[in-house]
Structure formats: C-alpha cells, structure tokens
Image 1: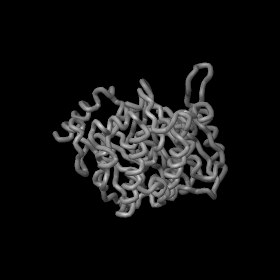
Image 2: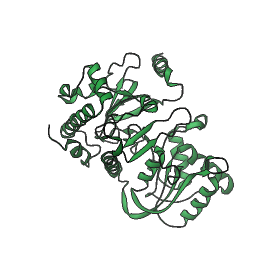
Image 3: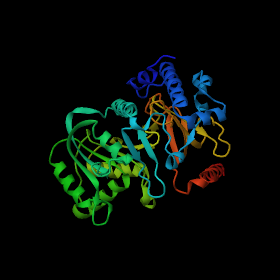
Image 4: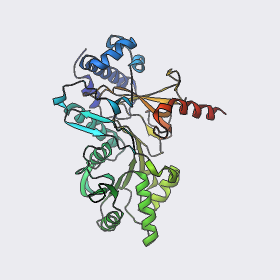
Length: 378
C-alpha cells in the first residue's frame, strides 16, 4: 500500500465530485487509515479481530461499510487513541445540553486535514472569500473562554473562510452566574454597527438564538436590514433546549432572509458530530450533501443490517481524515436516509435526517428508532 493516500484524498478540491476516480481515492485513503488505526489502537484492533474484519479484508469500494464501527457514545465514556498522548494538540468536547459529553482528541495531522476539508467544502459552494472583509456574529461560545467546545472550534474555523472584519461571539461567560449566557444586547449593538459598514455579513451558530435575536430586534425597531447577496447565515447544532420553538426550515429561511436582506438560499444549515468532524452542509435547495471526504450508510436499528438507498435507519459515518483516534467508522444515534439526484444537480448523495439523537436517553435509541420506522409505515 502506498503512503500518502489519505493526503491525496483530502487535497482533492472537488468536494462534491462523486465519480469512479474519487471513489478510488476514497478506497485507498480508507485502506491506509484503517491499517493505521488497526495497528495504532489495541482496543480498536481487538474490536476488529472479534468482528472478523481486518485491513486485509478491505479490498474493494463495496467493502467499506464493513469496517467495524464504534458507537458514538463510547467516546463519552472512554479515551481511545491511535497515537501517543503527547501527540494530541487539541481536545474538543461536544456542546450537549446535559449528561456526559464526548471528548475528541486531535493531533496536528487530523487538524490540518479537517481545515482543508472545510475550505474545500465551502469553496465548492462559492462561500470562501479571502478578498472581502466580512463581519460576523457567532451564536456560540466565545473561544477565548470555551476553546475546547466543539461548536466554538467549528465556528472559529468557519469564520476563517473569509477575510475577517469584526467578529462578535454571542455566548459570553457570566462570572457571577458561573455559566454562559446569550448576550442579546451585544448582538443588537453589533447588528446596528455592521449594517453601516457596507461589508458582507455572516451569522454562524445555533439557529434558535438567531431566531430569538430577530424577534427581539423586530419587536424593538420593526425594521429590516439589507446585507446583500454576498452575506450568509450558516447554522448548526440544532435548537437544543428550545426545540419546542423550532420552526420549519423554509419558514426560517424566508423570515430571516427578509429580516437580514439576503437571499433565503444563502441561509444554510449543517449537520455534524464532534466525534466525526466532517460537516454535512446544505446546498441552495436546502439539502445536506455527503462530500467526497466521507461516506454515509444506513443501518437497521434492530439488526444493524445495511439498508438500501432511500431507506431510513441509523447513520453510519465513515471518513479517513482522523489520525488520532479510531472514529473512522462511527455508528451514530441519529436516524436518516441517503439518496441521489438532488435538484441542485450535484452528483454527491443527499443526507436527509429523520431524527436527531439525544431526544431520549441513548439506552432507548434503538427502540425509539424502531417506533419511528413503524410509525412511518402506518
């Protein structure tokens, strides 16, 4: 096996160009990465040996789903590494609303790769702009205080897609309360300031907070902005504890687009997990797409049997970029389906979510999934 297969995959700029060439690149990258984790992690090697699937069994592209998966909650309770501890440069935690949080350990190789992946993905959407200074409001934790929270890392990375003007981090640490809070007044002041700068503007982070800000601003001043068609909103992380206030995405895009004075198709959501790292971003038609740097498979929640295209089940996410810990094949607690032929015309598969994990305790996620599938059939 030739070295450098993972790097060749990551450096391919056509983030949504699914074809025989990129499938071959992905296979080579997965073969190299699988062997690395098999030999680098005694725990993962034991799992593979018990499963009966080792690097010698990964021969063709169709073998990739068989790479043994680790269930996502394992990383909430255990640290499993494929490199020595002293090679870890950054530890990120999930931004869950309660219970145990995942801890993701990243070495320099993994960090370098995910940065290139993110730039390639958003570059394919025309959202990398290193010429024009852009102002930001980031509805996530201030990374100077919460640098180990995955959403803070993600938004800091997303804010580097352009030349930076002003950046306002909306979730501040309140020393008196000993916790984080949303700084609504600071957001309102930043909006007014940015509206006079005549620069592109981007909002990043939790959609619920962006929507709450819009309602507060409309209540106080009842006017809209005009940030223009080079401005974007990139949301992620779901509505968290405000799930009861969640509104349909088309309504969200329409209302927020009118308020900010930007095209509704410039309001994009993304799906991701801190344990996996690859962002699944919406196209202009509002569909999440699988980039060439990962693959998404669907498994029956009761039997874990691989399901055909278009059927709904538990998502299995596969990527070769992670060097530091063996989440190369991750079985999630999220329900979804994968299919082709998005109206946007891209060859990349669509990833459609059918329910996020964490709504119920994970010990019941398979039962909840089966209930959902039964309900869909009835």
